[in-house]
Length: 322
Image 1 (cartoon, rainbow, N blue to C red):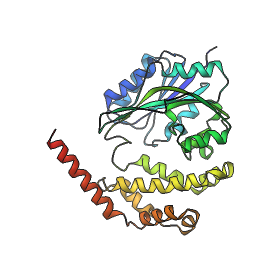
Image 2 (tube, helix red, strand yellow):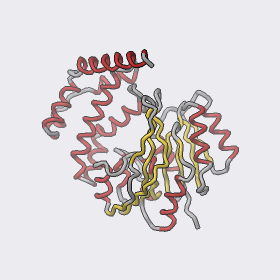
Image 3 (cartoon, one colour):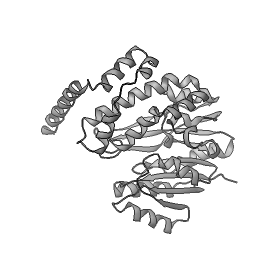
Image 4 (cartoon, helix red, strand yellow):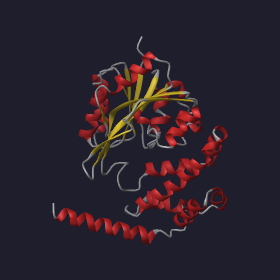
């Protein structure tokens, strides 16, 4: 008997045309043993009604309406609801090749593997270019530590939407949600296929655009939550450097995008979180410590502003000649 794949889609005020394309690409998959959960996080642009329409038209679709639980709700709530043998998720403005899940589920149905992994196609809204990622070769990885290190070292993507997991591997709360690589806790076998069937559409104005938003703060907060960090390190102590470096990297990213964002509640919340912690500084190496000191003491404002002004000037200049 073919196994069921649960697909969770987090929905919050997506561009309607892209959202419909996203859901249609899931419903029209050549592999049809799917459970599709549309998790509407308080949409107000009509997407909430479109979710209900899909539920009425296709028995495989279930809809949850809630208010502002954030980007990680698709994990914390959607994964609890899922009943399939395997589980995955899709961003609301992305879409799939119609045989994407069939290629991965062919592996899952023929072998007892914990994770089936694939590549993806990156659509860059700035250059209009589409590039294939992680689709050059097929291979297997055995052992939980080796799988996690493959994600950290860039052999496979860290993003969860280009892979399927066994349902029982998806842990709740602090067991898994510190960062994407930690969703591999307990996975002993990963099969990577050389196929890019997920279209990651980098859309200006979404969570992947050039503005500080709540999703970025959620990512940063995961690495600053001492309880989650302590738990993760108790399971995999070799992740200490990765977690510390990720925290500094997310501080940098949030600070950079904050400078491009009009002052609001999110930017104020981030400014309040820029506190230098001596104990944390002692745990990181020299370069990371300098970066951490600079960003928490707000000493990067001028160089970042200069960079943004130069970037803006080049953009205006190039558009003038188009």
